[in-house]
Amino acid sequence: MNSSFQRLIESGRTAVAPSVLAADFSRLEDELAAVEAAGADYLHLDVMDGHFVPNITFGPMIVKSIRKLSRLPLITHLMISDPAKYAEEFVKAGSDLISFHAEAAGPGQGEVLERIHSLDCRAGIAINPDTPLSLVEPFLGEIDLLLVMSVFPGFGGQKFIAEAMGKARRASDLRAEKGHRFVIEVDGGINAATAAAAREAGAQILVAGTAVFGTDDYAGAIRAIRG
Ligand code: DX5
Ligand code: ZN
Image 1 (tube, rainbow, N blue to C red):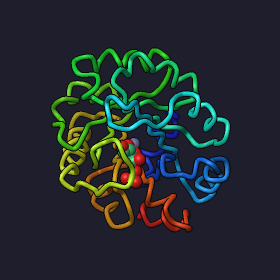
Image 2 (cartoon, rainbow, N blue to C red; image 1 turned 90 degrees about the horizontal axis):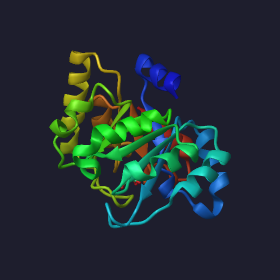
Image 3 (cartoon, helix red, strand yellow; image 1 turned 60 degrees about the vertical axis):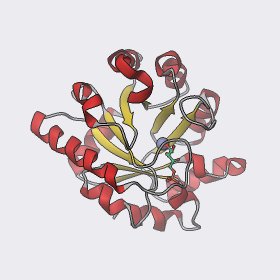
């Protein structure tokens, strides 16, 4: 993962991470093979606990199954209230990177980051559309990924909130200014039309659920999002 991230930053290329949430879970093996063949760079795994967000998806057991079914690096997006408590299970399940929400960790962001790194896993922080970048600024030198949410987390298929791109742009400027090495991922409402705004704001990884799994041409959808 280290080298895959480094290569990504150096290449200047936009990567696409299909969100498995929008896949047909009754045909998961075929779906994962299809997005891999269609040129996906990562898989984005949305874990929701029904507490931090008003929806429940899946836990480490499913991540472990997905690990067996795909060679793509797994970026796990924890939308859960107590990320420190469950980080280890998601590392053991095969996550290559674990991102947790700044709003969930509160003043404990540094400890959660340390916890994930101590498990020999890459770590990222996610911020909601209405969370200021200043909340995560003290940690920008320590994270491997900044996840800028362009919808309020909880559900796939929502409308892209373009205003959130100002934060991606500022994070990208700060990164250049301070020499940080984190990757910027934008998540929520990404499709062929909205992807351009995220790319222009400096995002390297674009997450797309509905816009990939909701079409019958995964390769075409990924290509259009990559731009
Ligand atoms: C939202 C999730 C997103 C979502 C993306 O809570 O974090 O990853 O599944 O789905 P689309 O691309 O449909 O907005
Ligand atoms: Zn997500």
